[in-house]
Amino acid sequence: MAAGSFLNVCMDRLPEEQSIIKPPSHCPVCNRKLGPLDLVPVLSYLWLRGRCRYCRAPIPVRLSAVEMVTGLLFAFLYLRFGITMELGVYIVFTSLLIVIFVTDLEHQLVLDKITFPGMGFALLAALLLPGPGILKVLLGGGIGLAAMALPFLVYRRGMGLGDVKLGALIGLMTGYPVVITALLMAVISGGLFAAFLLIFKISRRDDAVPFATFLTTATVVSLFWGQEIWRWYLNLY
Image (cartoon, rainbow, N blue to C red):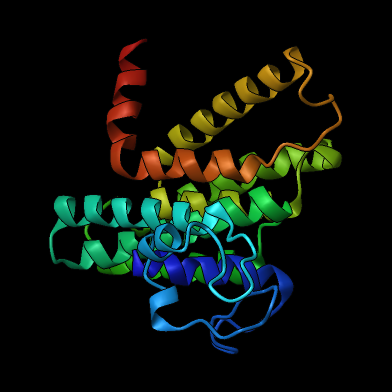
């Protein structure tokens, strides 16, 4: 969960072009520096009843939600991989995807300072770890890039360039053919969600949908069960 606290710092500061190292954690309303008892993941939020200890300003629920989700995902990764190099790689992958999910949801941004280092790390991981291999990873990156670039070129209002770069990152993380699984799940879930919003008049047709949230969620699922989903899909035919 402590890792979730750091991810929250990234989500808050990176979109604002701020350092993630300094200043130390503080209340954004009263600017008081937070002490150790204010920073215990989840428990501090519950103990303080969701408010700053000093000025009583409300603390966003998102902070505790990210801490809990990160803790659960990291526990799952540990149970799946144990203390191995794969554990470290998938912790980094998962952390990047969580940050992208929230920054797109809150700011409609997919930041280059996250996707570009992520691409480099994914290529390094492909060289060091057993798995699909560097050729399939590069092919996956090309498929992800092309699949996201096409709708961006055809209808630019419907997708941002950050989504295109995210497509390449997803392909490098998952490799071929799992990248196809991730993209299909993202398109289907995103389309169903957009249709739900339109049918119940929650949003209008020209309202933006944070598509990176569906891409990242589908990628997390595909990283662990993508091969099984892909084989199931092929067996349908």
